[in-house]
Image 1 (tube, rainbow over the protein chains, first blue to last red):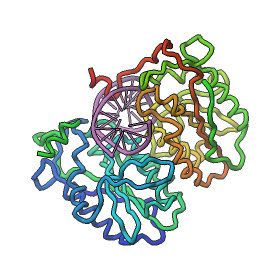
Image 2: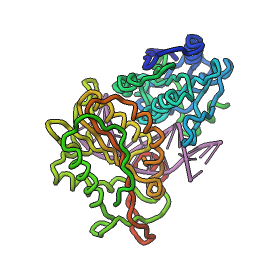
Image 3: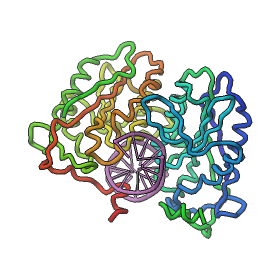
Image 4: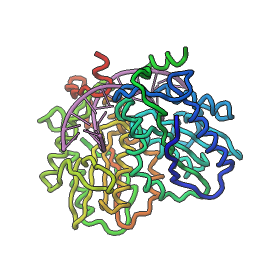
Length: 196
Length: 196
DNA sequence: TATGGATCCATA
DNA sequence: TATGGATCCATA
């Protein structure tokens, strides 16, 4: 998998180990391949043909090996019963959050809103959201989050006044297309195939 | 239908005819009944049993009679191909937006983000989002937008610095429950077909 | 019960 | 093709 864009929405004050966090995340993205055991990510270019759930697994495994905690629950606000974040790294006593968006595009809005809220409440020091490019989106489950569709909203999120924090959105894309590459199965079947 | 809460997120500067807009919207909400032709909204209290699509129709019809334009497309930003807003009223040469949320809760995040963006870009002078209460939500399609689940994010949206504008979220609820009231019919989106 | 999906629909 | 939605799933 390759990184095609890295858009910074908020960067201010002091964020411990920021450059190594960014480096770890981008390196982890590049470890993601398809089919499994191959040396790059080759997607079957069937429109809306591929499921999304298993795609992020190798990235998360790599981050875990670098000290990130997976499926970590953080208390963002007292009245929220928080769902887990995909990955969290503790840096200088503070939490840095990573989300690899595989839900609907509207869910991407919630993901960014949650990271902003977390920074305002000082529950996290920063966050990164990973989204497919529009080119990749065309081969995935209809209406999943994608960089292009979220991008008009970037100017709004840039308005937040955060003292110390970092917020970015990373666009990813397959390395190649091949009609002979297996479709990523949808639903729980895809997960089962990944685990074999 | 009744209005159970009206939470103001942004109120600043000058918004033409604001009090009459609020009054029209709240009056329109109260015209919504179920079953049709009855005098109040009586919901069948089957958990997740009722569809959401037809609920807002009477409210929109009432607003249309008060000069609101329905399913109106506004250019929020140049690079967006905008979807329609549920209802828009022109006041003092400016557009005031109304959305009655019937999608997934994550879609409610997008709806508010869009109104904030519209105010920052000065494409709209204000906006109101209408959401079911948690009590009503329990009888509707699973995971639809609801006031309680969105409320932890209100503090984030209150941070925006808008010169002239109004942004609010209104919570609505059925007037009564009755197991003999007809279920509101569901469509075939999402997993509905898959299940068959 | 609560939260974050994962999927397909309708329509301009 | 692009956008907003509507529906049910998985799991703590």
